[in-house]
Length: 336
Ligand code: AOF
Ligand code: ZN
Image 1 (cartoon, helix red, strand yellow):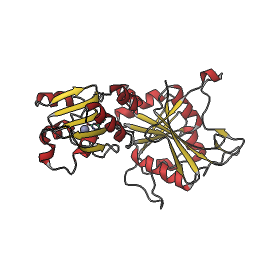
Image 2: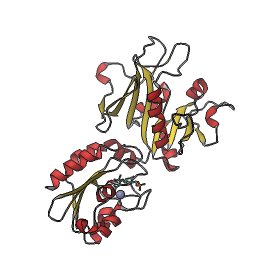
Image 3: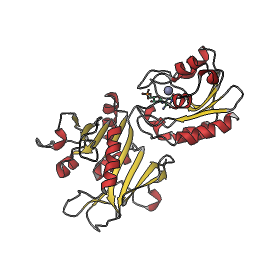
Image 4: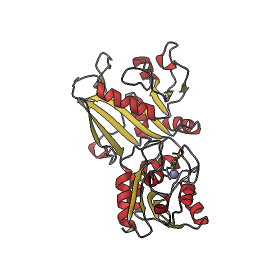
């Protein structure tokens, strides 16, 4: 199998994962004569890296002298997972072929370590598609801000609340379950003070039976207004208020505190502020087959006056469209 063909397969594997705190990565292992030995992908932060997944379960003697073809430079650090550079060296891999360099300051440097250990390293195979696959993720890492998902639960006519302010629940039970699974994966959830005052959300990740998930996101309130003494999100104290209207400042502060994946969940003004600042990496929209005809629009004013100035989004190749009960959930990536 050629390196190009193997990389195409690696990219097909990559999109099976979930992008967030970590990028999408796929890997293909070839034996010393170029035959396909294994494939793997990275599922998401906290799970094995693609290289480890491709090596898993194979006898060491078949791996030795082989070629690892991977869509991202193997990491050179011990993070949530062991360093791939070291695992590949220890496994006796002779050649590593990767598409694009890892821009993450902590993880980068794997290629240099591999070369220093005598491994042949080939960079840049299918670099274009591999860079495009994680374009927004790379940009977030380089800007030292969290990868930011914005979640909107709306009606068919784009409303997040009725004229009287009532908003619970627009979504089907199935999409609430999916949303809570996402909450359990992110490092922090952010809402504006307006949403806290109007909805009093808990912002916890809950299982279908209502119990708390094992991993809880930090809860973040953005805005100047006071958070009420009785606000539900104060809960166990794992929350913080950022007294600003600037989403960029919020991202900077949160990244410095270890938030790699941020989820913004409202309301319309905060969503618009993140979109205006081009800080949205992924827009997740759950659409319920319901209409209100009046009420709050899901996205506030973006300063767009004419159709030619509309913001465009592309389907996320890794997720795109899902049906959750009666709702449709769209995963969209902002276009430049
Ligand atoms: C790889 N292979 O499949 C992925 C990589 O906390 P950790 O240990 O999961 O490390 C996260 C970083 O590793 C992430 O920010 C990115 O730079 C890199 N991701 N590296 O060798 C993979 N997903
Ligand atoms: Zn790795």
